[in-house]
Structure formats: structure tokens, C-alpha cells
Length: 108
Image 1 (cartoon, one colour):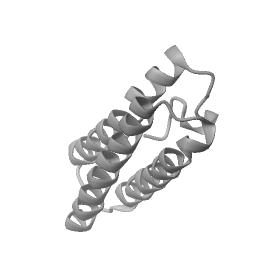
Image 2 (spheres, one colour):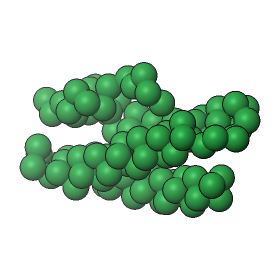
Image 3 (cartoon, helix red, strand yellow):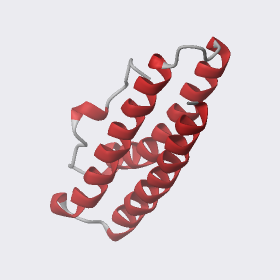
């Protein structure tokens, strides 16, 4: 099952890179609110993937706690690596606000 979680994590990294790239392009292009839709969609998918990985970690019957923590840290790093740069730039220079559901998370 750890291999399955690792595959999910690999997909999460790929999704995080896509979200970062799309977000950076949107920031550089100075898009309006409608232009953020692709970024919003990618981040929504990213969060859903993170939740799926967290559920798989929770349900793993024999995974040591240290391994669970390691997986969770990797998920957190990927998610916030995609989310924070976009969030900080938006908050500092535009009127557009990212949806509240992407605020600080307690599950991960």
C-alpha cells in the first residue's frame, strides 16, 4: 500500500508543478478574475488529491507513525508550494481573492 501512496504522491507533485506554472503565468500576465479559473481548477484538484492521500495514510494498518508523518510532510510541501506563492502575490497586489477553502488547513 505504501507504493500506492507513493504513486499518488508522485501525481500530486506533478499537479503541484502544473498549478505553480499556471499560477505564475497568470500573475505575469496580470489576468482578471476569469483568468484565474485554470489556476482555481488546478488547486481544487490538488487539494482533492491531498485529501485522498491523507485518507490512504489514515487507513494504512501497519504503516509506522514516522512514515505517515513523512508522507504528510511531503504532501504539505507540495500543496503549499503551489498555493502560497500565488496567494501571497494576489493578496499583495490585486483585488482578486482566492477562495477561502484554501486557507490554512488542519487535516494536512
